Structure formats: C-alpha cells, structure tokens
Image (cartoon, rainbow, N blue to C red; front, side):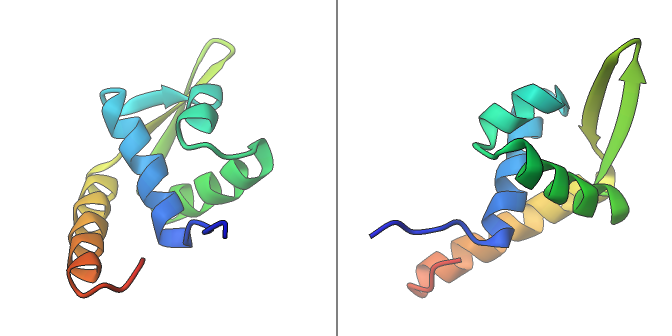
Length: 92
C-alpha cells in the first residue's frame, strides 16, 4: 500500500528543503529535494508565495525561493502539529 503525502506534509517538505539550503534555493533543486513534479511544485509554491511564507527573487536568469519570517513560523508550527499528531497515532 502506497501512502500519499498530505498537503501539510508537502508544504513541510518544501519549507524544510529550503531551510536545509540556508533559507534559499533554486526551483530545480527544490523540485528534487521535495520530490515533486514541476507542476505540483508550481502549485505549492504559488500557495506559499500568496500567503507570504516564501519570497521569489531573481539574479540574472536564475530564480531563487527564500523563506520569510512567516514561513519559518509556519514551519515551526506544522512540525509541532506533526509531532503532536504522531504522539496520538494520527498520521498527518
């Protein structure tokens, strides 16, 4: 049986991947780190950009994504919720 990641888990994976790269990452690297297709990554980046958890910056031809303070706060909260849900045996 293949378990699919929840939306929350995917958002956590994206933010954690960026955090591991010192808070800034290229889109292609993020795609591999978070194990997402380009289309799915685009969808989740849009969500995170719209709620100001990430910011996009361009340097020449390269686009980078960085975590904002709100993104770090969200990452901390989602990790806390994940830990609590695991303690109760409820997958998140």
